[in-house]
Image (cartoon, rainbow, N blue to C red; front, side):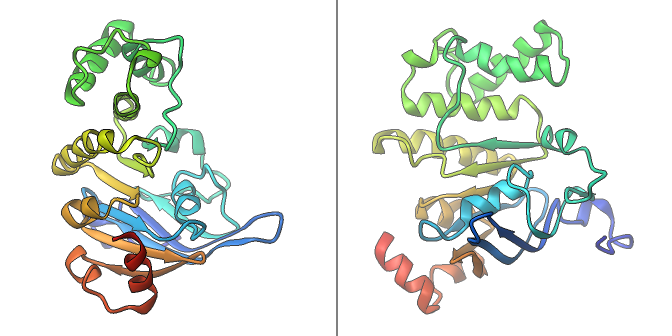
Length: 253
């Protein structure tokens, strides 16, 4: 276990990943000694080419993807300890995927209410009050009674974000949340994410949106071939002369 006893809990990393390796059954070594710390209230953006291990690493942070070796600690709880109840930990880490994964037979309001009622055992009245507040927060006050089929992609993704927030998570993980959206809908989702960041939400974001990384991130991470190649502040990151990063940025900017 990491020795952190002398550091006040408020100053300890909320997320601490140390020498994380992931080898799939087919022998693919997807993550190679990846280490990362995320402090409370920080926004860390992970970028890199397809197949670099970004999404795999993100999924290890709440153990949706179990690791082969290494350690992941969330708020002083070792997720890789066999005695840890991972389902309890997952309640505290929200995840927003590329696909929205909304229940088609429930309204926007119903989708946001469901998990707090089932998992947190909130009353229907309490869950509804929270869901209404969150949908208003993400700009969907006038779409609460709409089913997913009547919502645009951007609106569905904002419902998905509200659904994650309804669980009152300590951190939110975003796996390329705008990649499935039409270009004109990307901005509305990024605006919600910017609002969350300015409100102090701890976030780890896998994305190709370089503008978001420049504007919002506290640190930007570049991954390639399963390795964490570079980690810098946005200012230093986008002015780095690292050859592997420059090749990537040359293709996406």
